[in-house]
Amino acid sequence: MLSQAVLASYTKPKEDGIHIGQLTVTGISPCPYETYLHYHHLDDEIPDAAATLRMKNGHWQEEECLEDLRHAGFKIRYTSKNQMILHIGRVPITGRPDGLITVDNREDLLSIKAMSLDRYTDFKQKGLAHEIKIKCQEQLYMASKELRNTIVGCWVYAKHKDSCRPWDIFEEKDLNYSKPIIEATEEIVLGKQVVTSPESPISLCASCRHKMFCWKKGLYDTSGIEIASMPDVVAKWREGHYHYLYGKELVEEARNGWVDENGNSVLGLVEVLGDKDMLLCDDLKVQRIISKRTEISVTKFVEKFGAAALPEVIEEKPVHQIRITEV
Image (cartoon, rainbow, N blue to C red):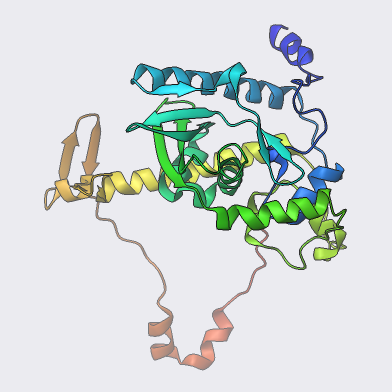
């Protein structure tokens, strides 16, 4: 009953007084068509109660990140309710960065993100190569009228939501990256340019929530494909699939060893077992098990009875599978 009441109370999310329908930095994409969709509200997303709670939780987790950074002695300003309002391009497009942080006597842009396990792991392994939206947003902030002549880079500070472990990277300002994105946005807003969807899928499609809207416009022949929207089910599958793959990776590392973040080789259970038959390691028991499996060798069958007899003993049976993959 209590949980139902909470969800009901967030059924209709409230505007924050800033994002009231207009295009902001968060709506600009390296893909001009995605920016076009946001500007003309052609595929708007209305968050449900659970999504609103997740965004609210992310807000409080980001506030905790600010507290942690201040606890570590960093000077931070223009955060929370005192965020700067930046202006990008000739439109201008407005945006509010997370703040400014002083590191080694230099003030840099600060971006704070609370991430799930899959995002956090990818962020550690691939940096902003897997977070194109973050890269685009922070580069646009650094190209703003207020910061382009004073800021040289941005600290992207991420926190894993469950374990609270932090990770950060430094992204240098790159006006050559932001310039074409700003120019494309100006053409959409000021030049009233009509942008069409890409002729074929691009790399940005993988993380774009508009891909089905885009593909239904003719990018793919969907006449033999059922189209549905089930965000909660999709999110559950993606999280479960990620944990499955990540779990296999961790088990494999525990078995056979890995290289840690400092480049040091860490032994795995199999290596410690060596030529022994059993290893007792804390709460784990590792055993060497040798078993025999019976099977018919195709090579030996052909040698004994001839290749002509092989089709007489081979049966073909249809196998029905349901395979789920990300598009």
